[in-house]
Length: 407
Image (cartoon, rainbow, N blue to C red; front, side, top):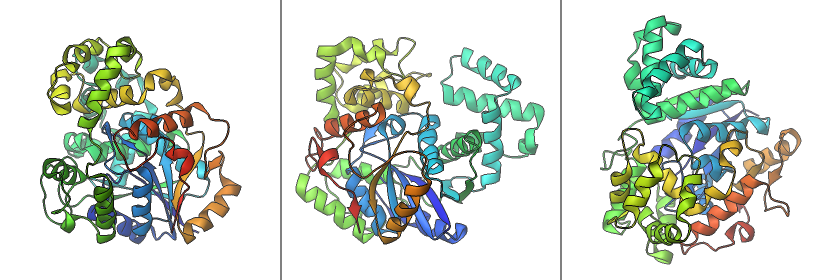
C-alpha cells in the first residue's frame, strides 16, 4: 500500500483540483489517496459555499478514496495552525507515505529548506523578526522580510540564489512551507511532493483558461446569483451536485448572510469579541466602530483592516465571532496535534484504508459523534449549528444525523 495525503478545501471543487488529484497519483505512484478537508468554514475566514458532506462526495467522485474533516479550530486559523492540524492528522494515521500539495513554485526541496529555518527558529532569525514586527508590520509580512534578510545574510542552504520574495509571498507556497515545517516538527516520515499550480492565481477573481480559481467561481456565483456559466471550469459531476444544491436552496452561504447575526450577537455580547484568539492591540475597537453601519461584509472588513491586520485575519476574526470561538480555550487547543480522526466519506478503497487505520492510528477514529465530546469536536458541532443558519440544505443537528458518504 502506497498512501498519499492531500490537504484541501474544495470551495468549490473545480478542474484544477481534479488536475491535482490526477497529478498526485502520477508523481507519487500511490495506490490510495486520503484528503484532509476543511469542514463548513474555510481558512480564508468564510463559510463554505457547499456543506462538508456534499464536498466530500464530490472528492470521492473525482479520485479521492477517504475524506477526513479538518476540525474548525484549525480550518479557521492562520496558515501555521491550519497546517499543524492537517499534517498531524495525516501523521497520526500511521499509514501515510507522502504528502502532495500544490504550490506556485513547484519544487518541494526549496520550500522544505525554507521550512527548516522556521522550525529551528535560531536566535539570529528571531532577532530579525522582532525588528520587523516593531516596525508595525503584519506578522506574515514581517516574517517574509525577516526570512529574506536572514537567508541573504547567512546564505542558508544557498537559498539566496533564488527569488525569495516571490516564493515566500505566494499563498500556496506559504502553506507548503508550513506543511513541511510541521512534518519536521512532528519528526514525520511522510515525504513532501509538490505540483506547480496552473491557470489563474489563487486569489484571481476572473475566469482565466481551463483552470480558473475557486475565488473566481465564487465571485461569479455571488455576482450573478446563478451557477449557469461555470460549467467549463468544474467537472460535470461536481457541477451537477452544485446545481442540486442551488435548486434546493437558491442562495449559497456567504459572508453577507452572517452580517445580521454578527450585529445581533454584538448587541448582546459586545465585550466577548476581546476574548477571540486573534484579537489584540485594540482591533476590537475598530470592529465596534464599523460593525453597526457597514453596507456589506466586504465594506466592513475593508474599513477595519490595517497595515498590521490583514483582510484574511479580520475575516477569520469575524467568522470566529459568528461561530463562538470566544467560549473555548483556542490558543492552547490549536497548538496541539489533532486529537481524533473524523471520517466524512469513503469508497471501496477507502474502506481498505479504514481497516488498516484502525490498527495503526494513534488517535480515536469517529464515523459518528461519540457520547463524550472533547473541546475540539464540540467546537465543530457548534460550527455546523451556526452554519445551518445560513445554509438551509443542512440541519441544526446534521453532525449527529448525517453518516459518512459511501460511494
